Length: 81
Image (cartoon, rainbow, N blue to C red; front, side):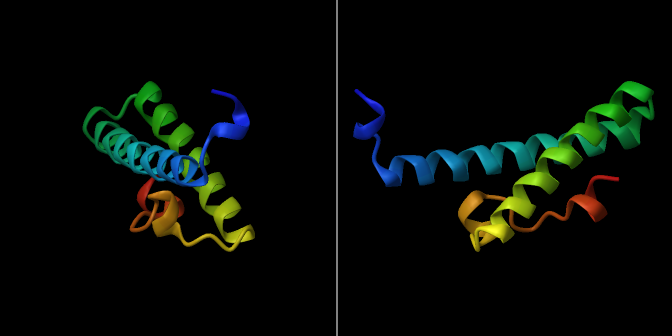
């Protein structure tokens, strides 16, 4: 299979699944940061903050609804700090 053979729907499904998985991991990181309160857990959560924030900003720039990338219902600046 070549890059040209990859269908748009496959790419959309990939991005949405990736967003959902990142959101789940980010929220788990937040929970660990609250429970453990270590520098590592706080830094780990901060990394997810950056990724979620960047993905949401890019979606906004391209007029892509957050539902399409699996990142609806999470606010990096509120939920991951």
